[in-house]
Length: 412
Image 1: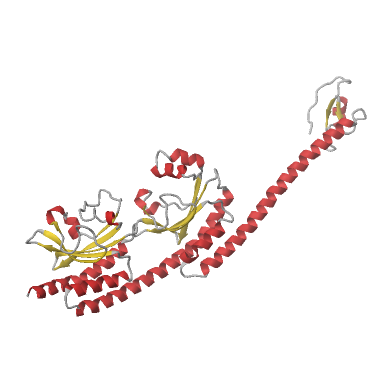
Image 2 (image 1 turned 135 degrees about the horizontal axis):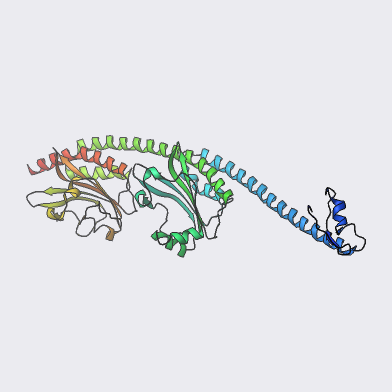
């Protein structure tokens, strides 16, 4: 709308559009303004200008209609995806069995080349990639376990959706070693949504894309809604699995107690112990090693499973080569992962060469003294947790006095 005028020469017209609502039309006309659509002298120009104005308006309306249409389509797709995920998570006590279908639905509304669902174990201070699908990303394979201490304290886990676009990833590459590897593999956008149940982070839904700036606000909102659906089902599934595991462990311990009481020698005892443990834990190699104070060595008394050169039955490790922590404290070790709190273990050095990447061991105690160790080893990475240590300690408490009794009987 034209609101001010200046004196003009009567024959020097300034052309504009004088709207019907213009309050000072007469002053404008007297000052030399002419309405393009009313002037008899310019019949062609007004029509050309009008067509251009109409064309601009038409394009603007078309663009707005297209955006609105895409928003409506996205909303419909989102509603259908959420409904389908709701059916999936309510159809099974084991949410892990429907992870592939969940990710397939997520991919309908969120750009992804790779996706993962991870669980958080606050007791064990770890994150495990329970399910990974799509393009393989080196270092983020399924079943990989990350120590939370590498990222953040357990009580500071992010409770918001984290989006890392191309620019942020390049800025972070000097601070975090793994970023370079992601960029080299073509990852340009990452989104991680926490799975929160009763104000506790129980896991993450993570997606990665090769597109730059792939994740927009609408994708973040969808990720939040999907995560809310998964979180409750995941917590219930973990609770069910935990109850089942506890029940199985109790049953195994009862059966082991029967076997222990009826064992006639240590060979029969050991065979029964590792057979029962295999029903609830991954065990590719089981070992019982006993201390001979006279020989000042730790002798391998029994091997169940894979053989390792230098650590077969009857082989010995001098006690001077073993720290007190190795003999007296429960330990979890993973091939390739060692920090300042992990004691140097000459025995454990040989296991990765045989393809055994995870190991747990607990001391065998009798009357407050250590008589040896019982050890389990598996091929998988990070196969054991602190819960497994607790179970093995109970097994140790059951068999330690029996081992001593059977060995005394054998000597007699």
